[in-house]
Length: 251
Image (cartoon, rainbow, N blue to C red; front, side, top):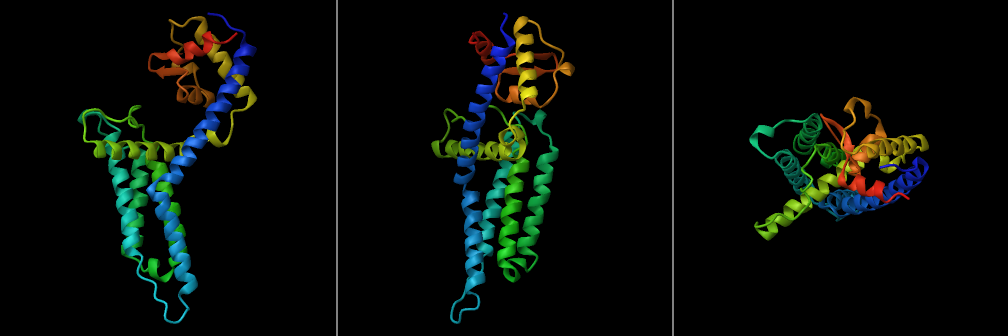
């Protein structure tokens, strides 16, 4: 299969721009729709109200620890979901560095919530710090690689349980993209797109033969893998079915 590299480069640039736009919309909308985002926003509003009304005679602001407890329970559930959702069997059980970092930060939040007087002594500052740390926890655990079908509705299971699992998968993948997908916020440069086009042309010239994986490096490779145009394994890199369709469509 032969293709003009300049044509491939133009088409790849257009696909990258469209995919970035769609991925950013999906990520932002999912993040905004998550219960934790609503919780964090409510915490800031409540803390701000407590700060502003604390000096008003006759006005008493209730303790917000119960509210933080709900947020802690949500974060704990997401941590457990990622731990068990990221493996298919007991043989695949492992603690990834990003997951461990998220757990450590979550334990710090627990200590700050229940051991220190910060929620009452500094309500606004603690709410802002908690919101930021909570988002970072989700971003860290979102770096754990989950099965590709984690956001698909399982068959033959209780509907509400399946719905919870699907929504959890959406949340984790969305926050993982926010914190781990630099291409969403920094678009690929011209030379990166050119390199990606060259790689696609090289793989398309001999689709039955994989390219050595040590020769396939750089940020654009990760982007092409994320878009499922190529696949990289220990055996090397090769076009996926989607990548073959992409190259066949180049005119």
